[in-house]
Image (cartoon, rainbow, N blue to C red):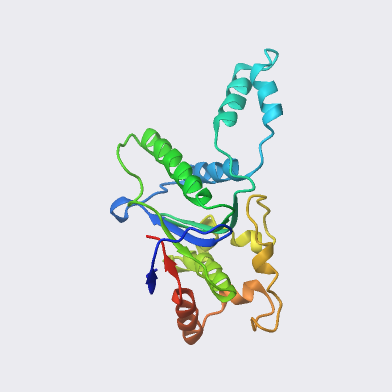
Length: 234
């Protein structure tokens, strides 16, 4: 998604549209297991961990070796609770999108780097490959206005609609079911965006109506809004 202004600007409490794709435009996710693993990495990075309990389990000889090893593994993982809020996401077969807020400068970079490194190690091990999984450094676009926030979230949630079999769009992992109240992932934070609906200034009675609106002129205006005054952190 090209931007009109290109500058480096990682700001505290900034909201960003993050995206990346597979190397050579190839697949990142090959099956349901790959999706599940990536989602588990997201949840482990964003859900608070009880370090005291994990330490107790890791040294409790009455516990199984498997439980102690798992507790020790979770203790080692970087956790971004309070540093990153994930507002929206979508995992397409060959690329992904996040909409997130960082608390301090550098939190977002640390979060994405940890996630991509961990998933690359998993992917290479599982699929017996070497080298990069992702095309290169992730792209980050600073969201500048409330309108951009809403329309970027819409853009992310509409990505699966482009699949050749549109009826299967819900099989692509995304935060959209959280917004519809169909599932609850505690590491996804839809409340801020949903607070705009229903409101007169959006012109829509519900977030679902806003996302699933199909109109050429509206789509063109939406894309224009997303690009307007964006700051690309490529």
